Image (cartoon, rainbow, N blue to C red; front, side, top):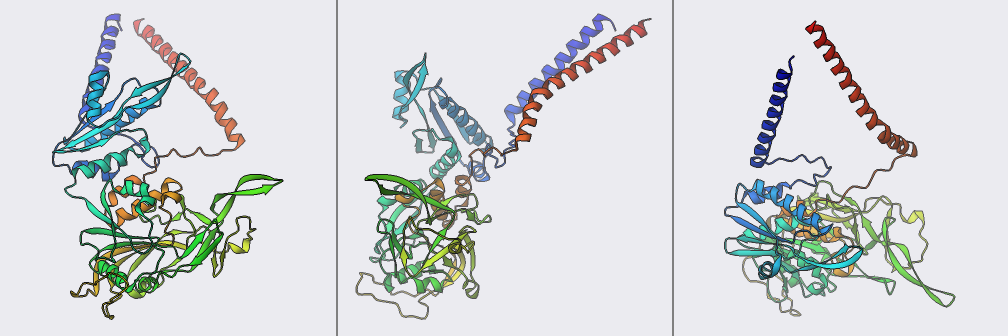
Length: 528
């Protein structure tokens, strides 16, 4: 082959490669695709988020105010936000547009702050000196005449939930209402600030004192949380009739009022038991202890000194045995429960209701009954943990019959309750009730890991039929731990990484050399 032909072939190959690269770039701009090989599809939008942006019926504009040239790891936040917004845009059918704005200079900062984005201080090491730099990492969403602001984005592990929940709130025509029952010694909303803050992103959160009137028809879910006092018949009647109207209720109850400081507990008589049993549910007067538990801090006096230490306390179980079929709990891994009582759902079938156990104790657990005395330094024996999978939370669905169907409408003169004189409802439509044997797990004081808060928010979403947000919130974006391998395997991987790549390069070089040698020999043979 002449040098001229060889040169022509080389130019042709270069041209074909260039055309292919251009076509790939054009296609990639117009078509979106991603291969996500992570186990939990960490870098892929959930179906709920895709459907949310697909359903947009008007233009949603996002302005992301991010200062450029922020140091690591803050610059990675900008990259992650950009990737995520590109995915949302790809599924929005043209109804979502975004832009990144660098709010540098006085005018840029003024615009960002007018939009509700506040500056953050980040630490930078420059020339071996620690400096504090001012930056912006927030965004504004505009839809029709409404506006939502995410002032600061620093935690990308919840980025998809933050974006989707904000878009949902911005584009929804109306907000559903959630009510916390009051009047029976329930905790004030101030004790639930984190839960309230999370719920208020999607719902109108209010209290309902049904001692002064029935639950409103616009309440999507009623939360009965950690009451301390007995329920009057009139209040129970209002709850019953709310359920008969199709209302959904979460009963988060403490059957034993336990006090760790006083090392003592007493059984609570809430007078709800008969109504719950009518619905096929029962909370038992016991406390579940579990080998899989959280530690508590104790102070001991030794030699005139106070020494603080931690001991495992089996009455604070860390529940990880959750239903893998229910979206509320299937992705939760460690729910910390405080003096939890067991529950029972064996009567559901006789009432034609469907039930599902959401959370169980571990394979080494037991129950304490009758006398509740807690000594953190007590020695626990194996025979105290002989049970497995004790039910701790359940959900029941179906058509419930009224607890007061064959009873007269109660009138309790000790309350201001005046039951409505209208027709009493005897049968509900399809609805749901959740029962948890712990009323404290969502209080700020007792919130352990994020799973407690997620469990509470998931329950509310489940009750009001907002399953989409559950899947996004429960998405596990944490990196899986490295798998432990034997010492022999470690050496094999180590030397394999050192030896195999050079051998591959050497083998490829030898192959190419032999091919060129054979080609040259063939040319020489054809010439002569």
